[in-house]
Length: 464
Ligand code: F0G
Image (cartoon, rainbow, N blue to C red; front, top):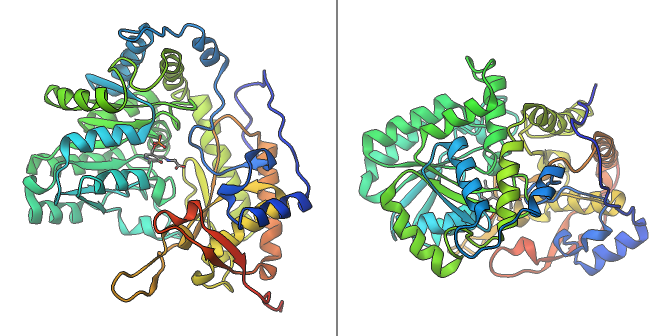
């Protein structure tokens, strides 16, 4: 197998430390086996997230020096506005400090208690921001999107038949907007096709409901369309992205992903009527509309990052680097979500650690082993993150999937480092029967995965 080669060279290096196994065991013990509580400088390869972890280019770093820190009317804002207008076609561009603030602004302006917001799959902050308005966040991804083994080119597609049912049952007055997340992070970084987006738009139009994108990974999604959707192979990713954006009337964006910056985001849309409501709230909670919670230099870096992310050499390397990591694992028999998504490889922990029941957090057990033995940080997306007690019966309810996400930061790690990750996971897979389940020692009432303390279940399972 050949890894794709990096379309950039290294000008600045940031040393990372290969801590000792003994040190990591101690740190894990102190952290209550919770990887969020481990200091980042004791991690060798950090695959916790692809968000805000990108390496900026020489042009972006140079852009910081032309930051205009004027309170109002910064030249960097006008450049960002121009860039976003060209890429998306949306007239109004409201910068925010990150994606969730764009969600907060949009939903505060448009969503009322008792309403429902359909999406292929809400990301956790998107869900939380819908629910904060007293509305229901409804996931309508196609059935293949929930099956780790189902090979489908656009597993992020939204189920149009179910959307039609919801809109018929609830109508325009109860559905303030429909959203599509590209790519579908909660479903494994899977893309959405233009055909599906158009079908969703047609339904929305029939019911008079606006369609928005959660566009965090729009360039990766457009690359998949070029690769997989008939008729798009010879078009540029920029053209495809624009065609996709044309299907909706606005988007929320976390530029910490496909904006190639460490902080930043925006809300962009067509409707003049929305601007005033959004701007009023923005002024109170975030900042003046020409900086939106960021410094002028951050706006410049974001504008440059949004251009760079559409470079097809970059995108081809990016998508193939993640894919190769997945392929190496798959070929060694490690169960992963297939096909490999755009920003991460998701390991199916229920199958990887079949001897550990969901009540003993197989995903977290794998996360712990990866850090303890190899200094790699991954994140559990399974029963620790989503498991909860049924409020009526008091019984533990487990999610359908127990996954471990290996999210790959953009332009940060070399293919050799990805090989190290693959070899490490494969080694653990060979020894998987020696891994033990975990139990919770302490948990917070909400979002427990961030602060929970765990311990290993004893005794260890007997090896056969
Ligand atoms: N939407 C999606 C699809 C996301 O993946 C994220 C963040 C957000 C919205 C929120 O953006 O963090 O800038 O406020 N995802 C990160 C992750 C945190 O690790 O997947 P934000």
